[in-house]
Length: 147
Ligand SMILES: [Zn+2]
Image 1 (cartoon, rainbow, N blue to C red):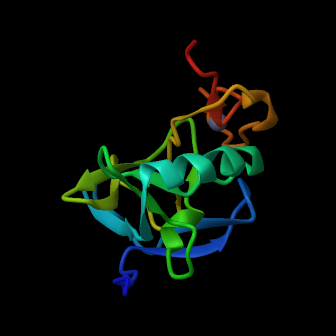
Image 2 (cartoon, protein in one colour):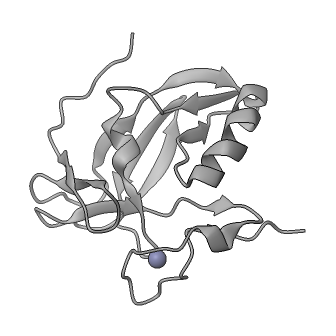
Image 3 (cartoon, protein in one colour):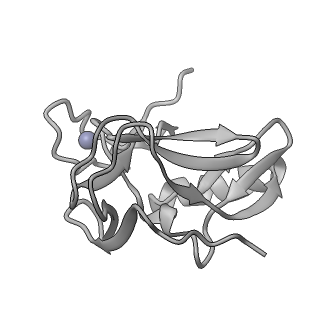
């Protein structure tokens, strides 16, 4: 069973960046753990097989937990999966004892969209244009793999 968050801080609604996004329900102070990224635990080997396809589709729901396991967040009840990428994010993901939390890295105003940097790498980065609208937008969600 997955622990489903009572979303005290955030809610899912329509976004300009993608179909859906996650938004602040009220003013969120910097440092707040806003929502847990929940999913099913799979081995990193299983994750490798899924990730190539997900990167192609442009929606990646995988978080590496440790050397052995990855969290697959593509499940019902994981609202954190709707958080969009931004090149100037106001949140970041952190791994605390095997739990992935989305933490506010600045003060966020009520109604603002929650974003973090996906930090994805792929050779086909040009297939994934970024629409975050930030001044420093890198134009693509993913960055080329380092050879
Ligand atoms: Zn961008």
